[in-house]
Length: 257
Image 1: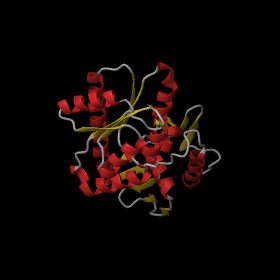
Image 2: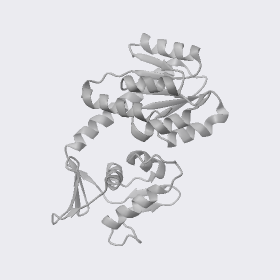
Image 3: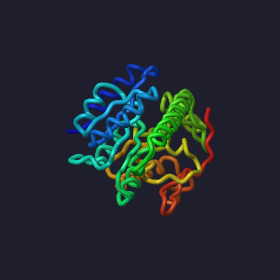
Image 4: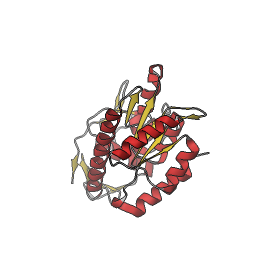
């Protein structure tokens, strides 16, 4: 069963509720004792929490409302935690902490971070540490949302271009309009929010919501198309440079307004 329809419902709920959404923490784990202990601990600390044993129960939670954060165990019996994470990240930026019970699965934790998880914990871990990490992630997430709302009312200036967030218009200094596709616009915004910093393909895939495969080179095609609209010579880029062994870096300084 795909979780995409439930995620779509979740987003409609978020949009309707706006900033008043309280949400809750969903603990996804196939061990009943773990689910009971963790959810009880959160409730004891005034954080609403519920649990899901796997994909089907997670679908029901997502369909009924928008969670504040998901704690996702990677080994889920018949379900694959990484597959669930990939589906969640394809349409949602809800914070996710992944957990694993075996050190031999450290590679899965690294892959989970590349797929968009916000943090990971290897068992055994303490409940106080888990609570502290949840609170830290929620603070960062709220700060990011606040900054994003501010940015949406303004825009970016870089080189000879200006991008207005609300109208989604990219113009040159002489007022000429540069037409961008939706994916090109998302990619450009990802660069403008992190200028002069190397970004991996996985980070760009997450930012542009193109979650086909973490090793997919489709992001390279998008970068090439964006270069053709910004660079004087796309074959010798000076704005979006390739960072060998890492990904790409947006070389221009960026001013927000």
